[in-house]
Image 1 (cartoon, rainbow, N blue to C red):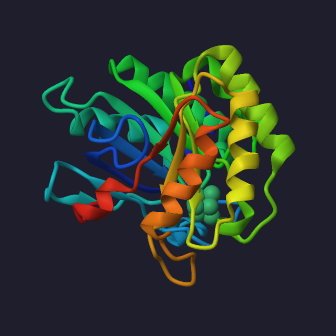
Image 2: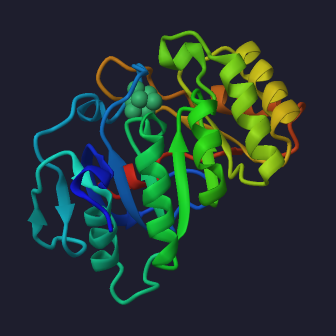
Length: 258
Ligand code: SF4
């Protein structure tokens, strides 16, 4: 029998139903579990509200405009799973639970429990990560179905690219057959040489995964969206080194969704 001290808790920003707006599964109906906290500060970040832990989580009861609940943080993982179950009505309406952030791999124990619970609902488990925490990823890899790690280009993030951590992350996912896509946000000032290096790196460490160039969505002080001609230059250059390079913007932004 479990005691209150056995209950796994994690800070949550929100749980909601939406359409996947990034990467190869764009358009798929998914339940999103956005965990709080991030150890990076990307210049293009569109979820800075995830950095601190909010006092309460925002839990959607039904989509698209249903009422919300505001339970206190940190939430028990069992309650998060119950929120996912309630949203997935009728069962199977959603294809997957996407666990995102912030950086979800800051909470490996809770992420493990969340993934097990989501799978028990019959939903695929997809994790979005900055791709810089391979130790935590190793802890949860067996219970997640697919992972979309970023390739953090310095020109877009304003921070050093964590090449070593990316290499370890991608190789682990490639070996497990769980690399859904490698995503690099590109801005108006992203140099061709940087994308060439990134495409070569992605092809070397995760050859089975598509390499996604995601034009920056202008946000705050972040990078501007690349022009169309720059986008073509970047794609041409990356395509010489990687067999599957795609340009996919953040589709949910066009629909005015989270
Ligand atoms: S990893 Fe994600 S949540 Fe963290 S700062 Fe970068 S874009 Fe924002």
